Length: 195
Image (cartoon, rainbow, N blue to C red; front, side, top):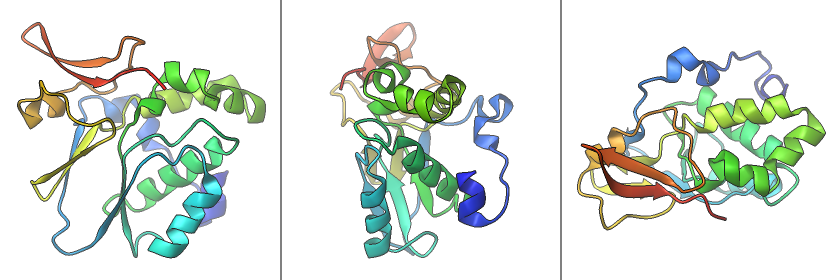
């Protein structure tokens, strides 16, 4: 419904299609040689603040955005916030990018409000659909092959971008955190399922 209101047409969520998400890269390569990119982190369902951000920074596609995660929880407008962000990503895939933060993990957003909001406003099934969507989000972006962007910072065990590129998607983040595994050894901790 939000997508119809925003763009006056109906969109199919290819993003949620299991066949289209398997094997997708967990790493974005973004080139900004010809445009300015705003990078934003921790929106936490502040829908009005998000709209103010677009008013001051420019609306897509006239301005380009990279969001570093934490779109839901800790407020009352998680659904409006994530629907707007996903709508812009679908409508402007070359100007609008979303990475995964720790609140895009089922165990976290179940505890901090997103689950309850979905259950109250629509139904639990919607939360499960968003969980599937979040499990497909990339975890990092490399801008112009020199600037690494991710939600939680760097692990001292990170030796290669390929460690992030090779993360399987979709990936659920267990309570103990999400690890990159190579040759049977845990190399780096990408997310910790904490607040």
